Amino acid sequence: MARIFNFSAGPSMLPEEVLLKAQQEMLDWQGSGMSVMEMSHRGKHFMAIAETMKNDLIELLAIPSNYKVLFLQGGATAQFALIPQNILNGKAKACYVNTGAWSTGAIKEAGKYCEVQIAASSEASKFTTIPEVSEWSVDRDAAYLHYTANETIHGVEFSDIPDVGDLPLVCDMSSNILSRPVDVSRYGIIYAGTQKNMGPSGVTVVIVREDLIGLAPKTVPSVFNYETQAKSDSMLNTPATYNWYLLGLVLQWLKQQGGVAAIEQRNIHKAGTLYQAIDNSSLYSNPVVKAYRSRMNVPFVLADAALDKEFLALAEKNGLGSLPGHRSVGGMRASIYNAMPEAGVDALIDFMAEFERNH
Image (cartoon, rainbow, N blue to C red):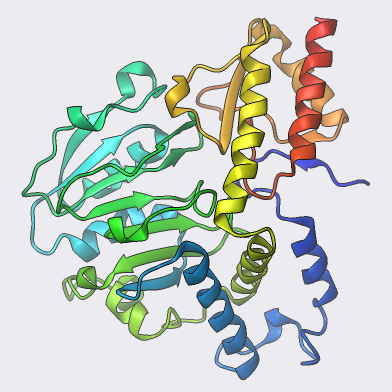
């Protein structure tokens, strides 16, 4: 069967070049006589893979030297709890901005460890916008301020880094990391699951400023403590070695594409053409305020919801997969991460136009 264009929100499609490289090296990684998944994580072969992977990420994101890069497990969802445990540092409050389902999840989990102040929320608009930073209510006595850069379910994305002064800025970038340049030095912590733009599920990247390391109380288990993980190069326990390897292949692929700045231009074009097709249609619509539309996740609905099942079934037959919207919002959603080629977006637009002509 021919490969489809996979519009899944995550785990998402991977670059075909990466999959072919992994296939080529499956039984024998570079003459070692072993598959990467068989290697000791302490052996020379895997240590070389890990070092290259980490250095490539530092290069692609221009991560300053006063940050530690951790490769952990448990997904971004685990970080919802680990962030307050690691950096509250005795403070009773943390500020959160609520712009969608993943923000809501982070807020709920943080509430187990501290008082959560909602600095801003777009819940009243059904998460179709982002409140202006000038209107945020930020408590300067809080330990940090947390926001989600891109909400995969509702399709809203920050276009700029919010200015919150000296308060440590913590950001969930799971669904748009490496899709656009970012000034890492503006953040206290950036964290992201890898299953959108970086590889398969199973690895969580945590980029943490050094002054926020070593603040966890002794009750935090070592495997969840940023300090012990940093000291052990994220190998306090056996890591998800094959997933690290695939993450490394994706980073090498991204460098071959010209890096983050180059991939951003492709992402702008892909999202722009898809939104234009939706806006010029009488059948499709997107509910998000234009200034906050996500480049990564494009939700849309049909004027007649009774056509949804037929649309999705025909899309599948035409090699356009994983287009149903999240169960909480319905409709459709096209996730067009870095690995989605422009040909995939063009094929979706052509299908949508044909479907509209027939209905």
